[in-house]
Amino acid sequence: MLKRVGLVLAGLLVFLMASGALLVRCLNYFPRSLERAPVWCAGAPKTLRVGQRFSLLSWNLQFGAGRSYHFFYDGGGDVHASRSKVERTLSQIGALLSEQSPDLVLLQEVDRDSARTTRLDELDRLRGLNLWSCWTSTPYHRSRYVPVPLREPLGRVDMHLATGSRFRMAWARRHALPLLDEWFWRRAFNLKRAILETAVPLSGFSRPLVLLNTHLSAFSHGDGTLSRQVDVIMARLKRLDEGGYPWILAGDFNMLPPGESGRRLGDEAKYYSGARSPMARLFRRYRTAVSAKAYAADPSRHYTYIKFGAKEPDRRIDYIFVSAMVRVFDVRVLHPHPYPSDHLPLLLIASVSPPDGLGGAAEVEEKGEGVQGTP
Image (cartoon, rainbow, N blue to C red):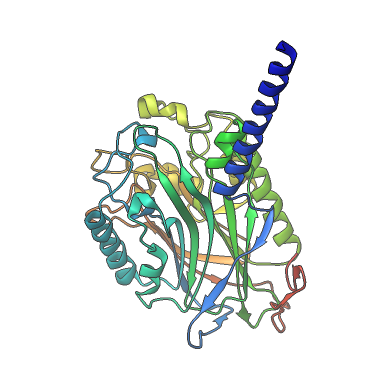
């Protein structure tokens, strides 16, 4: 009798575990390591020319919720934003984008159908500004229902990286980044970090300008995730350099500049790597739009993050890196007032200047599982 009861209980346990795993699988997004991202273009977008100056803006929008909330992941109690505040924040974001009117825009934390922002499609709002001819986006936090925090579950989440361009986009694809070192169920409902890679054809050169839009992990607590993510990024940049592709990498890296311990940030220093930050490897190997020398001369000028309740930013965690074929004329942090996000936008003025003797027709059409003209 006891044996039969034991078998029944064991069978019930297996059934519950299998059902739970299936439910987790159905609720969440599990991307492949490489996926194509859709590209939408309207009208007849122009083609970027070699040597032509263009502007690029990179900005983490804090999912359009605004800075009046102290959200639970930052130690506060707020989970959801009201419709009116989301609408107001999107209006402020749209006003800055319209004022600056960049040729290229790389955005992080764009909610497209999330309960916390009343299920507004923020990308559709931004497309409605009619500033950019082409768009692409990819999710990096997507779940039909996130059951935490328990007192007020987050619910449905659909947050994207999004890239817009006045110029023609040939293709876009998503590269998965390593996940946080945590239990399966937390991984399933948590963010799936990525690089959104986009090709902008160049008139007068055989390779497109490749834009890499990314947002690395926060709250990794030194578990090695950021180092693994930087490994993937550096491997990708190496392939692009070997193939002769000009590129720009921008986004929220969630790391302080090399050499900054973060001690001046008090308790928040625990969120950032110290002297052995993987950011140092990127700085050693690749060129930043803001050089280490320029940053050392006036650090506060380049701060990009403003914590809850503060009046001014106090750290730099957003960056732009450029390849040797990208000529930088200017880069600056913009200071919109009021601040609609906890991150400040970065504005770059640049052009593509390939080595002499290189050129030819652009090879940028998709073909089969790969993409012609890409490494």
